[in-house]
Image 1 (cartoon, helix red, strand yellow):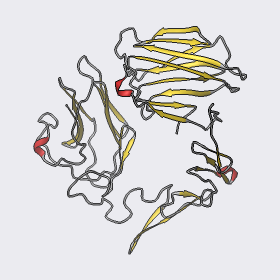
Image 2 (cartoon, helix red, strand yellow):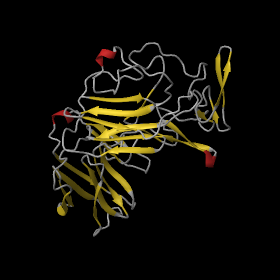
Image 3 (cartoon, helix red, strand yellow):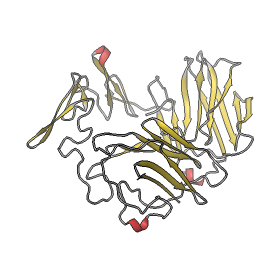
Image 4 (cartoon, helix red, strand yellow):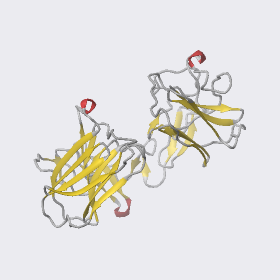
Amino acid sequence: DFLCISLVNGFIQLRFNLGDKTVILQTFQKVHTDGSTWHSLRAGRVGNEGYLDLDGVNITQKATAGMNALDTHTDFFVGGVSSLNLVNSMATENEPTGFSGCIREIVINNRELKLTVTDPKDGANVGDCDGTACGYTVCKNNGTCQVEDLGFSCSCPQQWVGNTCEQSIYCSQNRCGSQALCIPEPILFSYICVCALGWSGKYCDQKITFFTAKFVGNSYIKYIDPHYRKRDLQQSRISLNFTTNQTEGLILWMGKAEDEDNDFLALGIANGTLKIVVNLGERISVPLIYSKYSLCCGRWHVVTVVQNQTCIKVYLDEGPILFEDIDPQRKYTALNYGGICYFGGFE
C-alpha cells in the first residue's frame, strides 16, 4: 500500500493503492514554477474515494468497490526518500525524483508537522527556504520578523508581547497558578484562568477534590480507555446520570475530535431536548433527537445509549425512547473512537 503526492510535468498528482488497484488524480491546472508563487494543496482519501485540491480547484475520484484501508508501516517522507529504490513503481508516472522547491506548512490529519531541524526523525540536504533567520511563521500573531546580525527580532502588534509575539499583554503578568491556562479577554482588558483538574478559584489557587463533577460551560474531563484495543468496537454501551439547568450543551463525545473523518458518538442537549449524533465512517453525522421531554430545570436523569453495529437504542430514565438503524446497508459497523472520551466539552 502507498499514498504519494508528486509533481508531474507541472501538474500535481495524487496516487494511492490500498492493496487492489492504484487510484490516480491530477489537477486541472499547472503550478507556477517561477519560484515566487505559493500554492495551497489539499489531498487525501476517505475509504477509496480520493480528493485533490490545488488553490481551491477540487478533483474527486468517486468511491468504487474494493479495499478501504491504507496499511503502511514505513516512515513518512517529505520532499524525497532516503533511497529512490524504495518507491513503488506505480507511485509516480515517471522515474521518481526528489522535489526541488519550498514547503512551509504541512498538516497531516489535523496535526501540523514542524519543519525545523530538530523535529523530523531524519533527513538530508535540506536548507531554509527564506535563507534568513526569519523563515516561516517565526513571529506569531501577525508579528513582523526583522533579520539581525545575531538572528532575528519580532515587531509585535499592540496586544502581543514576547520574543515571538506569543503572549497576550493581558496574560503577561497573570496570576493564574498551578498549571492553569491564561485566556485573554481583550474586550474586558483582562483575562480568565482555566483551572487544571484538582484546582479552583479565580486564579486556580484553591486545591479541591470532587466526587460528582460540576461543569460550568468552559469545562471538560478527558478519559483514555486503557482497554480500547481489546474491545469489540461493533458494540458500545454508555450510561450516565446528569442534571442541568441549561437548554444547550455537550454532555459526552466519544472520539478523537481531530478531523471530520473521525468516528464519534456524541450526546448533548439541544433546545432543552436530548440529541445523539453518530458517525461510523461515512462522514455523515446522523442526528437522533427526542423532543417529547424537556431535560432542563435541574432534574436528575439517567441516559443509556446502546450501539450494536449500525443499530442505535436510547433509554431515558430506564424507558426506551429512540431506536434507529442508521445504515441498513451495514457499510460501516464499528465505532472506532480511538479510546478517547470527553465529558462536558473539549480541550
